Length: 498
Image (tube, rainbow, N blue to C red; front, side, top):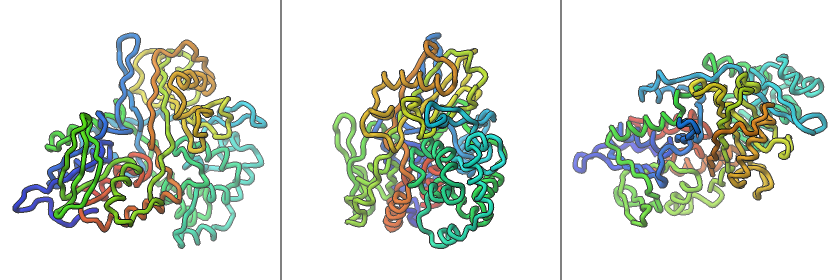
């Protein structure tokens, strides 16, 4: 909670604050607290800062090294949150835009056999088309599904006007199916929802993943016109941007800012408990060598994943947080990076990458998405014909065993499968072309942005708002993406809100 007390006490000096978690939300929380006058200690259980915004190093056979992003590789520009932070850290000159060639989708072939690559809608949100006359939309949908989609332009919007007024749960699937039909939902929207959010559109909360779209639907009288209006209102140019050297350079700059501000950053220290104290809170912790200690603070911010934060909060909540409020583990995600010497990729045959429809059989393509990193970001190009591809595995609908390529598949098998999948997706034979490859795995990386999760988040935050000096931040509360996380931290922990 944002306490109204001053950061300094005339008798005891700066108020002490403890931040639990060294991902981007924890680093930013620590920085905001330090700037408002707190004496801050940050605890990170692992040896590395940054969480999903950390670097990974790829040594190459020629003795050079690529430093790539282990997780997030861009940020949404729809809000000024991340851009503002970048400017404050002196990184404005490093901002880069992606190659404008656009992305593709990989859809089931005729009668469900094989697959086919088509261009993604140029004007869209979550795959929902904003221009039903666009040739790429017609190619993807076919005549019958396109005709059904056009009904959106004349259908009444009373149902969604009532939903907006009532404030009840609204899923992506319900809105798209009602306005544009099953064809648009399965062909255009499902690949985006699965690839970006690891989710099912029938459980994904529209307000969380597309803020303002429901309001625009009611105002415009059409979902397609709402998408077009929201896109037109966005900043000109690409919807995302990055930093030369990768988003991990943001983590490095923020960590340096913490050191300059005198923050005590301690890695290899895991928080094991949280308790109330007469003048604030105590955090129990354990170091990697097994040493136990207790830290006292007037302000505590939990910046961990959802399950870890709930496990610390529940014992002090006195029954206010029930088991139903405990966030489920997010879908496990495995990211496979391939560095290949392949001249056939020079022309970026699939633009900046593809999202794969969940309807494509796993024995055809097991990945849910592929980014052609060197086609998307110019700074990654280091040698002629050398390309970096990143494939993502793991959907919320995957079986818990290894029958579907995903988080639970072993590295060797997953790397071999990635080469096969990349060959299928790009149309370029990559057998024997890969000079380096690696796997990065994330558990709880993507919180389920379902309507039930949204209600649970509201319950947790309502309770936190009544606790002096205690708060929690992170993607499980704010939603996926750096823009959501950074904006949320600044609203709750920001300088001047102590």
